Length: 360
Image (cartoon, helix red, strand yellow):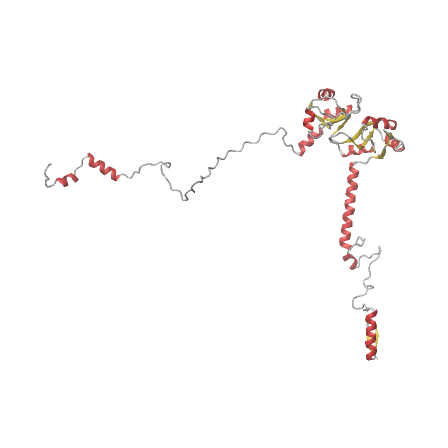
């Protein structure tokens, strides 16, 4: 081992060797070692209970975007525009097919869509869709309805000429879906209402019974949507109003399948709406009269009566001077009270009158 010499320690501390520089650089550096977050252990504030594991939160899956529906929602204006191009065909034979109907109206213009309605099914429990796919149709039914949508309104006007044509021994009814108020009024003028119709009666039975009255434009019988059985009433429209006049003359003699028909003039929807409004106004006036006049039937209010404008009698003013005031009214008493006062006055020696007491 080397011997110690004076000045060795100071020379060692003041030396600038590479090792000394490395040590100085290490202590003078401000850098810190980089540690990832996963390597750091953080102690939980609340320790989990033994025997029970914490539930893992399921990842939230994004909701799937709704698929575009086959039948998009339409505005009221768009629905009205489609209805104006829609044609109604009634009293079609039950076995009439889609191709036959398309061929029948193909000459009037391009058909946008076609659908059948009011097809009677045999089993109501299965539902309409299943019965139509399996061809379970009520055999007792004789007719069905259809709707055709054209590309233009002009095609519909031309197709109306098919009204009344014979299709497999059926007079078909071709009409608009949307009608104006004037068209409804014209229809009601030349139409009659028929009641007490047999449930099994058809449009052809009604037509044959009323052909003697005049030329018939169409016969409309109201039926149940599911069973296609008649409801017992319907309408008949004649070409002229003369058919209505003749039908009203023979209304007591017309029969179908042994039942006497009930025939009446037909009222339009416009007139029925007006009568309903008039009835509602009358009912409102009666209610207001009960509230204001305490059940009295008068057109004037209580304030007007007591102010001197009106009286119960018409065209006479109310005279407030003739009405007795509360001060001038004479008090009245019952017989028992009057007899008691008479007895008291007789003891005291006085005379009693109704409303007054005078001493002799």
